[in-house]
Amino acid sequence: MLPCTLLSVDEMYRADAAAAASGVPSLSLMEAAGRSVAAAIRQRWRPQPVAVLCGPGNNGGDGFVVARLLQAEGWPVRLGLLGDAGKLRGDAAVNAGRWRGPVRPLDDPLLLARDPLIVDALFGAGLARPLEGRVAGLLDEIGHRRLDCVGIDVPSGVHGDTGEVLGTAPHCRLTVTFFRAKPGHLLLPGRERCGELLVTDIGIPQAVLTAIAPRTFANGPELWSAGFPRPQTGGNKYGRGHALLLAGGMTGASRLAADAARRIGAGLVTVAASAAVRPIVAAGSPGTITAACDDEDDWSGLLTDARKNALLLGPGAGVNAQTRAKVLAALATRRACVLDADALTVFRDDPPALFSAIDGPCVLTPHEGEFGRLFADNGDKLTRARAAARQCGAVVLLKGADTVIAAADGRAAVNIGAPPDLATAGSGDVLAGMICGLLAQGMPPFEAAAAAAWLHGQCAAVHGSGLIAEDLAPALPALLQRLRRRPRVAPTTAGPDLLA
Image (tube, rainbow, N blue to C red; front, side):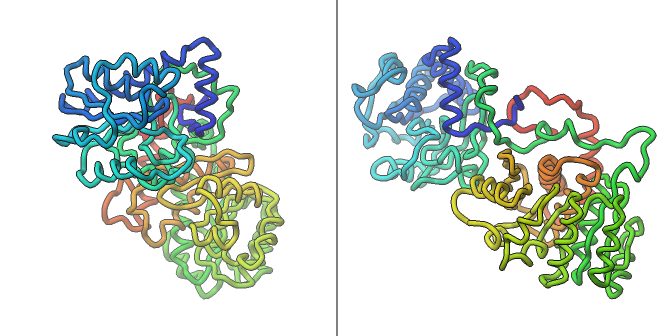
């Protein structure tokens, strides 16, 4: 099972239960969890006063382990508990009994005296209702005083499945979770509350994932590199696919997309353009082919060439009847299609017409506004993207700082590592071109969309400040070279591999 696998809250409960059923005592898991948190703290901070805030469940039990281990190393530890220690049950009660020190109520002013390092062991990922009262007040006080905070599992108040902040949640410097990360660690706004995320091994057998069969992933090369296209000895440009892009009046969009499709490896790229804009497109990049396309008949004629095996429509196309007709004609070929921007908006008054026409490999790349014009906007981002993919039968790449890529079969990936510099005109056109270029080389739609999203973010990260869309495609060659040097076997290290 891939190390980039994410587990929902329910799936993590099942993993814990399966580990216990296989003979791993739950008390041993709690001890290992607490030990990994204590070790992470010792690696990052010098000995100093620590306030461990424990909740009434197993998350609090982890906190008791951390407190005991740090105290044994000579750290000054104060422990606060929400509720009555006598009401703790199971493994949490056992570890509370092993603690040698006072147990203070959470409203004890001594807990935060001398600005201690905070260990948040109040609530885990399964919290389902907003925090309020003294707990919320305490967490807000931690934030107001800017105290360093370490979250166990998730920062209290962050929902493990959605990343939603339920009332309030601390801004942790470090969050330590166990076995596998959860979607809420990567989805906003929860991701911003986690700080550094550390996923540790606490002894849960990898085999428990087989029965769980998780379908959510952190996007990274281990998810798709095994099928990433690589030039073959003896190959030629025709074997690397031929991408056909539709240009509109805003020629910059199609030019950016065409350059990206070529840079990512498509053997040939043709931009279909009207007589008015064709010279502009042709003047941009001499390696891009241009073709006359003044009306729907011209477009249909271009589609008769089956060698043009990946199609991109939308960037700069215009929201009009011609764009709508050309999208439907493209989908009727059942070839791989990427629909972006205007190719989506043109169906805002009749989304079912688009969905019913999708009968082949297809990727939709909406931002939140375009998504809301086509799909129900209810629920968290991961749920919405999955529901949309099922509804339309295509891969849906819902853009944003926490881009989600979802397939109709239930697979989904959360993208990380994309810097805010990508919020610049034309960057979405580059992403669409990259996806189309990978589809032209035979990559399946989900993997192509995930790979392009990751590479898109990495190109921006490599460039850094001052990024404009034109900078993205030129950054691809170095990244592709590093990908080419990777073995096709998935790595064994936990978490997303960022080609570090």
